[in-house]
Length: 362
Image (cartoon, rainbow, N blue to C red; front, side, top):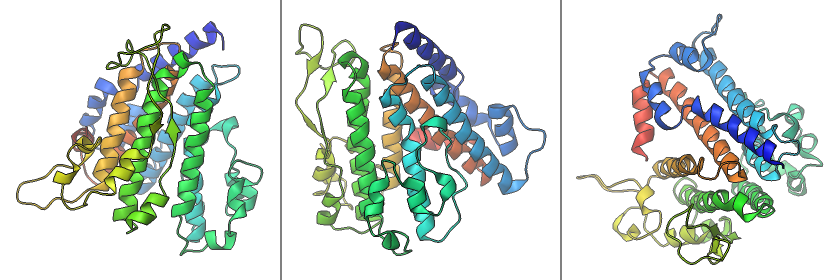
């Protein structure tokens, strides 16, 4: 990667972020009351809008395409795009494959929303519902070593398979990051360690509350990963010891530590959670009401935390891979926000109500 490619891709990312609905521009979404207004704001309107629910689906497709195109436009600025960015982009392919497997097991048609990531796509979604044709000779081919008849059964427990897919995604993402220079991966490494820790906690909450797994069962499905984390006191405050080149190292981090700790906490009493690292992301106690851990609240608060971290770090190291890593994180957050806005508008909520709901998790 030469300096020209780095400068061009960063300038393009800055231009797109300047027009995106992140940071202060999120407030613009509060003015919306209808899907038609949303269409005009985001896409400058359409001459022949489909009616009712068809408009909602139409907008969901356009939001998905918009995000993919804007991420691809920056990644394609490089003659040989860094693997880290490609892996980050392909998170949607992992999500789409999971969704397709659930649809196949339920005997449903191919999902309406499949993200088009162009030349970086590896799954042949057009072969749906033939799993072998979809994933043969891809990094997902390990699924073919499982009992496919069981996987396509409506009663199949996807817990193990989803854990393996998550583990593979993050393992390959971390491996691609490790190939970069310390200065290139500095901020991205910090964000990724936080994200994996939070994903483990979210998964532990879901397994215990939604899937009624025991503590021992839940522990088996966590992503047991470790990372060395690099810090610069000038970029990430709070680190004092450093090497002569300005980079400080901390010890190896266990990314399932917080999730394993939370397995000892009750789900119906908040006080034992005090002092836990991610306590601030839990739902609060309310006077006169019994407290119960809310996985959805925690997941949304975690998403907000990663979003704010990426927003703060986006401009801290211009021209580094970490800056583009943050850019992709911001575009993915914006996609989730815009999708939530149209879903809210479709059921009669206002833009203000949806945005304030998002802000309540901050």
